[in-house]
Amino acid sequence: MDGKNSALSAPPLGPRTWASWFGAFLLTLLSILPMVLKRGLAKFLSTSYTKHFGRNSRHVRTVRINLSAAYPEQCEEQQTELLHEYFTTLLLAVMQMPHTWWRSKGTLQKLTRIHGLEQIEQARRNGEPCILLITHTVALDAGLIALSFDLPMIGFYKPFNDPVVDWLVRRARLRFGGEPFARGTGFREIVRRVKQHDVLCYLCDEDYGPKLSVFAPFFGHQKATLAMLPKIAKHTNAKVFPMATYLNTDTGGYDVCIEPALANYPKNEPVTDAITINTAIEKSIRYAPHQYLWKLQLFKSCPHGKDSRYLQVARGELDAKNL
Image (tube, rainbow, N blue to C red; front, side, top):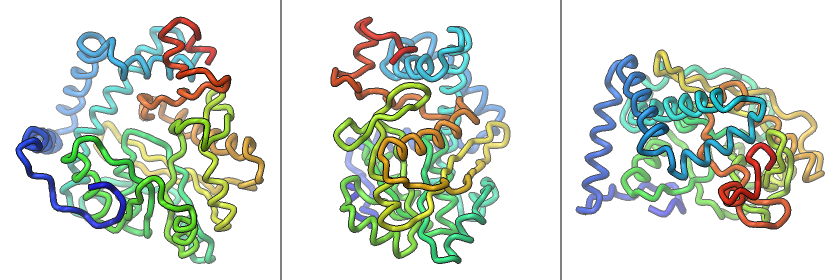
């Protein structure tokens, strides 16, 4: 499966996929455990990973740098606690993931509360195109799937390296009407679909390099921010609604929070528009810091043209608090 169209290919079943299918089976069994057991297991695995066998991994190093950059006012003990809480929540979200693979629409609706959907429904009644500016939280997929019950959702899709995981995740996004596009889908096609009132799901908190981005403040540091969203909004006259999904770690349910549309956006000033985007995303992260996907290399691109800032930190050339 290459993500180039919305059709779901046959599941990968060759011998090389058997270990992955076995892992998916075990994960499905874990998903039906009571939340109290899953929370306990997630905390145990988080502690084991961050303090022992994974403490020097690239994943942990990236999270530590991101937390130091985003929360320089916190002491090392506070950041370590947040790191542990992040990994615990991430693991818990992974254990919940099979619900989106196999559970019925009715069950998923019971698990999900959507806040602010009426804003999009009203805009659509008024004939206004809509775009969702989505934050990369650990429960991202659950929110997208829940919204596809009521809205014609389209969005970009980055295939997973593991073909089994890729097939399962893509199947989950497709089975209630969502339609993923491969990154690189033509600008005109995206604009056409938004004008036809498909709701575009847009994530732009990742660093895709300076070529397609502008540098703008994010948690007080210059970050390469994709410059495409304001162009799409301008050409479609779409309203842009910030959205984030949060996992309820007590019940296993999800809260999908849709904020009011960005005001006076876009302004056709690239840096100003990037600041507006980053400010909205930062607000959603600060609401529940432990639920953001901190493993992303948010500050990889260097505004001074040097190599990765994460490599510069590793070499001792940069302080993580002063990227």
